[in-house]
Picture 1 (cartoon, rainbow, N blue to C red):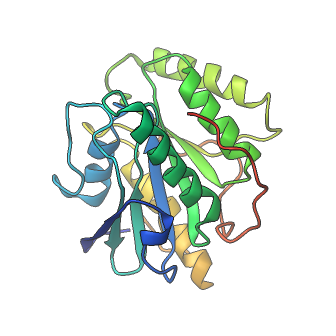
Picture 2 (picture 1 turned 90 degrees about the vertical axis):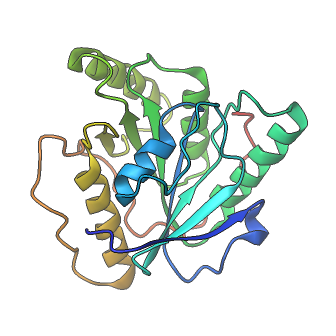
Amino acid sequence: MNIASAIFDRSAPDLGSCPDESLPEFAFIGRSNVGKSSLLNMLAGKRDLARVSKTPGFTKMINIFTMNKTWRLVDLPGYGFAQVARADKAKFNQAVADYLEHRANLCCVFTLIDSSLPPQKLDLEFVEWLIDSAIPFVLVFTKTDTVKPAVVQANIAAFTARITEWSESLPEIFTCSATTRQGRSELLALIAETVAAERGEESVDAGEPTDDAPTAGQKPGNQGTQVRRPNPARPW
């Protein structure tokens, strides 16, 4: 998939402020300082699509971009905001939960995990909530260039081992680096395949396969409009 256009649509404070549901959406979320903005800029091929800040929790709204006029990239506020007041934090988290649980055209949640760290409580709680809520998601382990490959693999293995406590099958797993552009073609290929499936078309070729291909597991496919089980909001 080539990104020919990336147009900012709006910053929505809540689900009701989001645009209509005519285009498939792919949401990106992760713990503060996971490198989400850098990853989004790398995917879009634009240095300033998402603002990169040294302040954790900079993204405080649901930021929506229309890509190639055919799908939307959604930049969600991170969980565990370090610089947000407690009252605002609760409000932001509720807006994110509402979006994830009730957005009918949400095709997949790209859950970003820092590959340089062992499993973190906030990440595990959020993934458990996604599983309990039957929200389609994949795992994207970021910052693979910052540590040795053996450390990345060990942290991924430890994280997926914890997930098996809540699910019999694993989601698709990707590794990426905004610095080396590792994983870009694989993530865009998944989006292209899902958009094509939504339209009932054949998948668009996104490039040659690489060693970074995702592990076998569930694909999000056309699950964006499935009925989701209600679940109490978890304070991630």
